Length: 526
Ligand code: KIV
Ligand code: ZN
Image 1 (cartoon, rainbow, N blue to C red):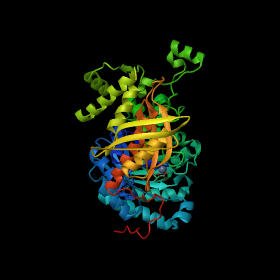
Image 2 (cartoon, rainbow, N blue to C red):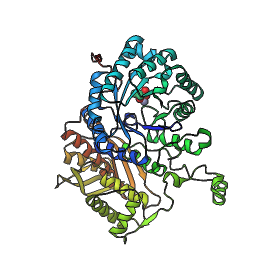
Image 3 (cartoon, rainbow, N blue to C red):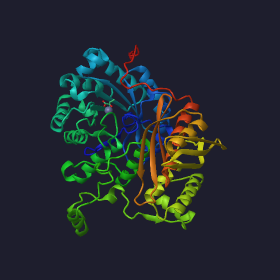
Image 4 (tube, rainbow, N blue to C red):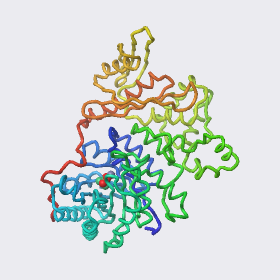
């Protein structure tokens, strides 16, 4: 451990996944976790294993496959939660149990209905129990920023005594402001007598838009770990955004004088991947990773940047991996050039995956003159990062117009056999999706639909992100094509493939809510 190091604890797969409507399956979690490892985060919080069998499997898959970062699992301060979390991460290279209980009077009174003494005992017992399973135990005092400071310090002292190696101070409801939160962290550092035996961590939510500012104020006052998510996704208004924290520490190094272990060039790619798989679109003016973050619109700014970049740019887009030269391949490009380009873009594909992606590239190059890096990335995500494709689009015809009842004929291969049907609807997309429901036998409800152009130009690839409800769960589907109806059907089928994947493995049921009170399972004694 180095004194000036800030450890990055990424909770995209846990708190980020708690964003309304987001649900990642095992494959998607693994994709993101591998990318987080490439990005160089110190800790990946892979999920909350007790929430559902699917969550358990996701955490276990990450723990077994991802090398490098510590893999943490969240658990409430109960024996069963800790046992289940441990079972999920015990195979990791570096496992961490992350147990939590609320410490604010408001949570004690209304949510837990327990006294301060009872919560203190439960926190200590949970850490002691977790410590018997692994040396790396993090304790979070939920709603710490609204807790009584004296009581919080007592809890922290006692959990450190019980073996906690990291104590996390969440601003759970995003209520803190920077000066106040910084002083709060400093007070903890000064008042908890054994604080030198644990790292101080912070975990800030963005309800007042201050999560990053609060995290940085905490760092200035002695926090050594920050918990954050890619693109700032998370419960309600989200969590502190990882890319904003690390770029603030980098750009203002002389001020903060702290180091991180991040591979900056992976920032943009990680942001795009998380956005694609969660279906949470990044706002164009988002700091660091928004589409406009490095765009200079006014003539004065453009002139200044052309003369000397630093006139209007405080960091370089290349540093975070934003593409500069974008034109890459055309319809005469061969397999070798294609594979080489994908390697340069950071994709490591198997022969079979490469073949699938190459076929899509050829198809695209026939329809579109210039295939850019963004196009290639979109194709690869569409073809390779999907769940196993039980349902695959074979062909699609549709007719639509101002005086025509929109009609669609769709051919889908299901486990390799092609089925065809036709139907009508309010528009060509609606007609085609009705047919997909008939053919797959699933009843999907389209909850959200977003269409974006991947690049500029009339022949741009259209990317559709669809949120589809099937049974007790919502699924995000993505599809790309130069034809928006086809992109829509691909996105819908992608969501249906995720649904059937869960259904066939008996994992389509509802999840336990993090805030659900735990009945009768608080026995944590020796
Ligand atoms: O916001 C919060 O308090 C949390 C804890 C469970 C760490 O997410
Ligand atoms: Zn949180």
